[in-house]
Image (cartoon, rainbow, N blue to C red; front, side):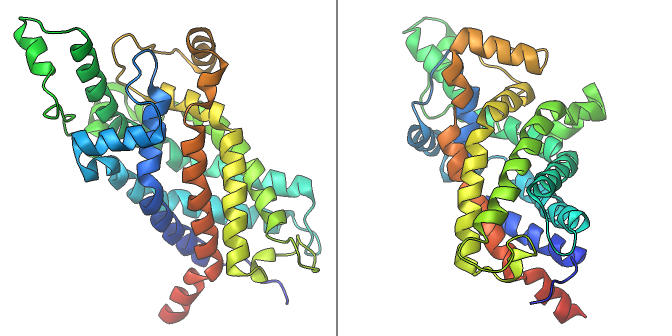
Length: 324
């Protein structure tokens, strides 16, 4: 089959739809990942299932979707930029319909770099909303551990399920950050986000392209999405996504810690990437860099499986066909 030129509007639509569907499916696991990664001294959650169970108990079912609105709003441009940029870079770097491995890696690097302009503020806002419940739960645990006390403040903070975290909004956080820190406030942790997203894309896209071409005799670099069956694209997306996700988890832990503005009692604040890495290693040991790795794999695998499945179904092309 002859190669087609990349239709950028179609790719943007595909990426946007894929992001919306994927995020809706896996957001609760992403919330658990953020809360587990932010745990330092006080151990509020023992694992993903414990986190989700306690979240539902204290905050209700929709507590698992705290921060989902900002993610759903910004994931469309984020996924659209990432998937479309990778396609464009692959096309530009191809020669006679062939793309070498270094070209695949370079294309992934370019895609990861492009998406950071949207990813950083999205992650910044999402993390504050997701982590509010953990901070409230930590205060409850701390108050309970202190035992009964005549203090009115302590007795109030020890109330069980009435300690739902205070409701805030992405708009409120955005305005506060812009007021106190300017536009740079929304891009706190941009360096760490870049350090995470660029290696992720450099691993994910080449691995996906090659897995997507397994079992087919045609040249695997000449535009494999036109020939791969839906199921193969889905499985390739899940596999490549989980491998890349686990590989960059240490960088994701650092990014999450740097972007978390409110800290719990006894929790470290960090001056930058190196300071954060050193403190985590010193206080919590090497294993802390893999906090939330299982959750991250469970988030990214279906997210990219769904994304690639929707992407290669060509929904954008169909929409543009109906409009045109």
